[in-house]
Length: 403
Image (cartoon, rainbow, N blue to C red; front, side, top):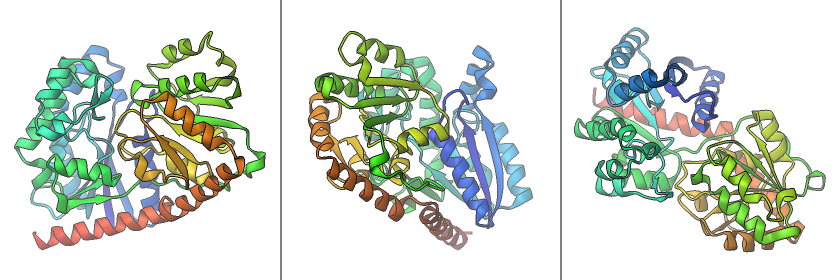
């Protein structure tokens, strides 16, 4: 099968789960003998140009005729069976889906976030979950709140993109299949207007997992891995550690982001400084090593996540997960089996759950074993490949019936 992969890479200074998934899926397809062609852009192209780059990105976001024209030439030359798009923001734009008009190439879009209908990408404003734009099928709430970077001017190009492609029916006429990461996301996006009959669910996978470290050889620590943004709820995690006090295990916070300085300030003089370690941003191998040595991963998100890639990574390493009871997370983390859940944004409930979970240690170890079994059932490269092929084949069959 010949597959054209399309992706706008986010800036290299901020590690992206979407970039990671794109690269992993590209290599998976090549390993199975498919011919893979790439059509990519990089946000670094505009990030380094300051205000001129920002203007270029804003103009390209709603409709980029140059990307469409260039891609059209690639499609006519290569004649791929499938064009699989991962991200169009900000430089490619959804105009690229119109490049396949009159061709037999099937189009597939992976929904790594909610940006098809949500200007922020993550449905929240004022630091709380918000689905107004999805529920009303309108961009006026986004403009009212300035959802993208809390700035109305910055939000305008994204709002224009959403309104334009809803108006010209890009999603209904020019995309043959959508891949949601979870059933939760699938339901939200179909309720907002995406065609249900063309929607599939495929979670991310984690390739080449090592053998989990024996439980007795692990450190008695808890780990958080992710961007240090308000949406990730790390403030809740730190408040829970303050409640836990001197009896708390070591907490390792891996990642970087805009909230780092505020988080560091919040632990000073509160008796937990020696219990919380901020490692900063680490490379892939260092993250895997530190996570594999832990006895628990905590995700205190206060937003509707897509599908945090760190969950299948933790499961593969035999590390159970404690996650907020919000969005898709309760459907990924199974209560009392591979982990537990707690009330989002509630330090007291998080503290209560963690204390109960931490002892007895044998129960936590059993959860770690169950986590690895869950990984083997759902999140290996081979399982993901089989799902992806079923999606491609069903989409191609449907496409050829209509052309």
